[in-house]
Image (cartoon, rainbow, N blue to C red):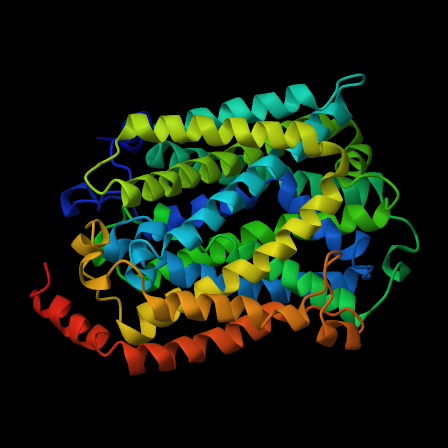
Length: 470
């Protein structure tokens, strides 16, 4: 079957392990899925936060965005490398660390994350369409992107890969055109490079936002590598995902910093269309199509996470494509409602939302990566993931759940949000270092406790490697 024919076939498998004879794809497919999915308006808006919210000059903003993306993408890519070996969605694999019931804590939070990103994509798309069509409200654009997203999510894995492959070339070309137009046709203010300046809080905040952008993909990045041939190896999957997501995120973020600094008094979507002039409709339509691709990915993985919750509560159930469709429609409706109700205060809410993600995603990614790479060395009994009693991983891994909660608690003094500023963050002038502390504490604590109180984990590694565990 050709790649075109595969893309038009509705995916039948949901959360079940992918059989070896149905594996397909190449490492470069992982580059395009993450490069193409990030070339969208929401990425541009996120880059603009460096100058509009954090007050950095362009040079410091660019440096902060580069550092944040390069560091955060390491964690994202390490998760991607798990997909070809295990062949299951990331949230199903999480049962190997937290147990069948214990994993519900993380899966539920991840579903909320999907809803947040979905609503954000819809609001940005709606604002962009409204900015190029006089008199048009945001609602039609929001509805259009929602419909396009749900169609792709219903067809599933291969159509999403094909969609982002096309967007890699189309959106990439349009992004380059937009940059050239803004810099050489529209022109930048004479004092562009002198605007704003350096501040430590702004730099740390920008690095954190860029790193989180990458880390936020961790709960579902392996969903898009799980069909890859098992013998492709972790290294190609890692590097293809790493550079695809890093470059796909960094380039539009830098454009957002340019636009936000040039026209700081306008909402970024309107500032972008104002600077693009005659080519604004083309750029907005193409980058909005990129929003639909990213939304489809969130819908697809959100549906898989909902099915994971359902199968945990009803272990005999083996959900199919119809169940995935229903879940995608439910998530689409909820995100559509959130976008329509929350669009008036979007930017402030979005900033708070991505900061909140830092606190709940960092401990999970630390536990997952330590368990996978340092404790079990990629050796898991996949059949146990779908058993009612959790198989060799049990129903609740108290050590993992405890470390997850510890990872959140230790961040509290370092948090800096409108709702809460911790004592350490306050003493440092509002700098938020919580995600670094979360990683630095959770990783060694989980490694030590797991080795001390779960000696069976090491035995299981040898059993799985020898083919004993079934």
